[in-house]
Image 1 (tube, rainbow, N blue to C red):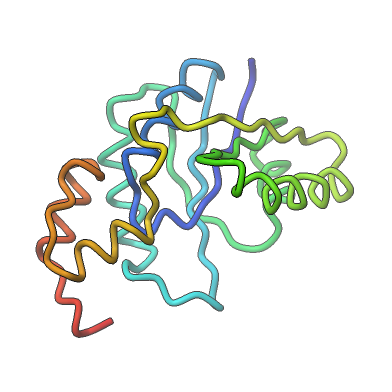
Image 2 (image 1 turned 180 degrees about the vertical axis):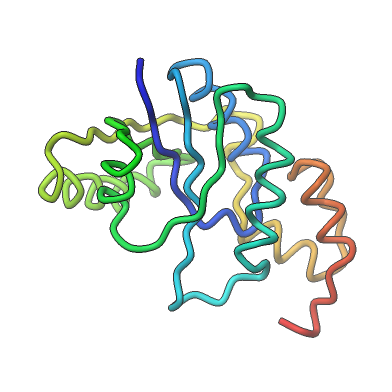
Length: 161
């Protein structure tokens, strides 16, 4: 089914992200995880760390690559010859913002389609924000994130953020 781009900040990657990656890898010939480098955000993990975590996670999928991106998503998709942008939805509340972004992207690039994938029910509640808060307060995040992420969160000093 061609090439798809799965964009995000992934700060940090969660089991919800892995669920979407796994399912997208089964639907498309190639999936590019596009890790956003947004200078207006101050992520917990720098771009290199997020890329490294996602590369470890994606290693089990032969058709999944991880790349950084900045600027317009649709321009990145066109550059990579992707015809699809994948967006994950956890709840109805996610839909409004995602729908607006999809319409804006369609206006900019009518040849790039947006496909929404619902996160599986067992990880539907997991968000990067929740993971960071639990980790910041010393909680166990191993049921919420892949092992490479849990390891890095354990090593993280939250006073520096």
